[in-house]
Length: 455
Image (cartoon, rainbow, N blue to C red; front, side, top):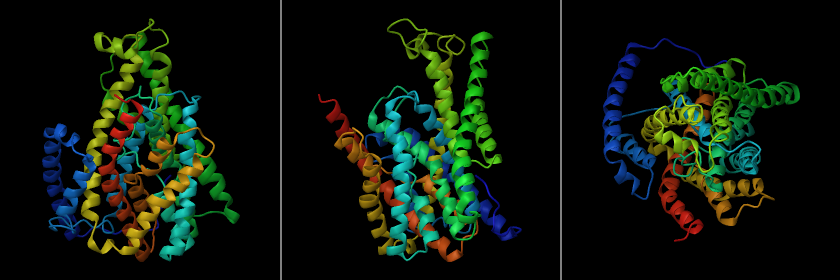
């Protein structure tokens, strides 16, 4: 949800423009070399006990202020650029997450991600706020804002633990994927609450405006707008493919168009665009799920027919699956490219000045105390096993979503000192999360697979 910016606009100087030109020229070179290297050595990287974001982060740290100081990227100097890059990455990733969640909404498995996204996320905000006030000396407004920034788990960096394909029915993967898709939007009301307590957003008398607009309308309105856009566009495409046999081979345009339509419509209506694009992807997948398999012969699936049928994009039985598959494939490619850019920026932005003992202690409390407590409370009364529950507690990955909320808050006019403090805390959390979770995800998920499928 967009609100008016409080920060003053100024005309960029000649020096600023030259500096930006140098940054972009170096960025093209770095991105090109890195993408080609990753593409060539993909199979080698996948065999390593770490994820690709760890490699991107290390390269950023080496080139940035922590290492060789080849590139000096200061997020305080370029907050709008950083915000919009993170915004695009999260939007694309949330649409992808929605496409991967193929189970019907009435399925009982949805209860766990919903609990994590609402109950656990809310408790995380409150516990981080308490830690921020008592341990970091922040005001309640700043502490709640910090909690909202760090509460969402990340859909961009969670490729190692999210659903591998739409037919993946792993309870653990579905729970973590669904949580990441939902809580990037449900954390927004607490961002607005923190900004309101800092005097940067209107809350209304006794918080009525926050409850009615920022909580009620913005959440449910965003879901309705995104779901409606996804449903309408999906139905139109399937009608053209089934009735008129039009292949509509511009799936990349369909993807970008639906993301832009749902996100822009949600923002114009003052609702949460993140929830809208997630709902749009989910609605598109629900249309595919309802139409793909119900008319197929016993023992056959739309995926089977899609492989052998050259007319799959227009065949009445396979058109839904083909549409969803093509859109998902293009979206995943965009997601990978944006992931490289954003994680590199995080590495470049980190400086030795951010690495204080108090920040490191706070990170440990967040991952080893706050996350497990919040997850345990959210899963209370469910039948999820100890192993699944323990892995959910650990894999609370923080990343690009937190970066977006951070820069969004900075661009609302935070005091420079507070902005620098929140940047230091958030970047430290994100870097530790990328490294710790990136190193442990491969061995832990391999162990989990052997446990569930011995032999």
